[in-house]
Each structure stands twice: as structure tokens, then as C-alpha cells.
Image 1 (cartoon, rainbow, N blue to C red):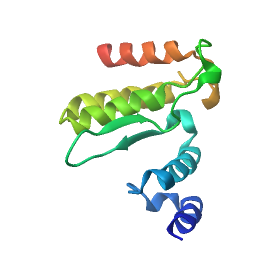
Image 2: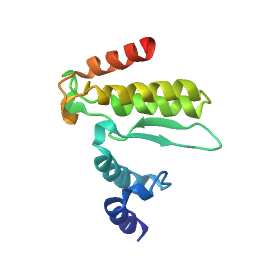
Image 3: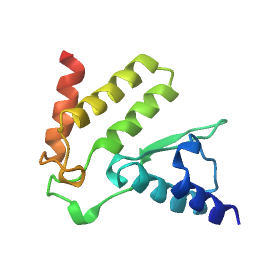
Length: 135
């Protein structure tokens, strides 16, 4: 099947892929694999694009109830999904700025423990917001 083939090629040659269009059932499986290849579920944004209606942007991971109230979940996928929304709305400069803030946080190791850092969820978000305002 196509799902079997794409998961094999995702592992073997992930650089071949930029955008993948699938029905939701297969997309959930494929995007989880893609997220882990790129750095983990906390880093992967997603866009459900409807060319004739409302589109939705969200982190690939969905909610993480086991981390509720602990301030340890990685916010980068959520922030990146916001950047994708901005770009979709035609706000390219703002989208690029948010993405640059994400990149700066990774470069400066201002990340949560799943990415080898020690920052809190709010700490990462606050750092990126400050970076966007001041850089």
C-alpha cells in the first residue's frame, strides 16, 4: 500500500519529502513518524489545509494530558503551527519572524528537556516572545 511505502521511504530518505497529502487516518500515522525523524513530537507542526474553506494548524502531537500543569511540555510545535497559520493568512514577514525565534531558541539551547534542555514550557515561550520583540 501507499502507507507502507511512504513510511519506508520516510525512514530511508526523509529529505525527499516537503509536503505530504493524505487522508486523516493515514496522516496521523505518517506525521508521527515524520515528527520523530525531525526531532520529536514536541517540534512538529501540522496544517490541515482546506483550499475552499477553513484550515486548521496545530502541533502534530495533539494534547498531552499527562503533562498538564507541570510546565514541561515542549511548546515549539504549537508556536511553529502559529507561524504556519500566519503564513497561510498572508503574513509572511510575521511568520518568518516567529520561525526565526524558534530557530534562535534551539541554537541558544533554550529548549525543554525532550530536546536536551532544561527550560520550562512558559520559559521557552517567553524567551521566543522576547526574542521576537527585541532582536
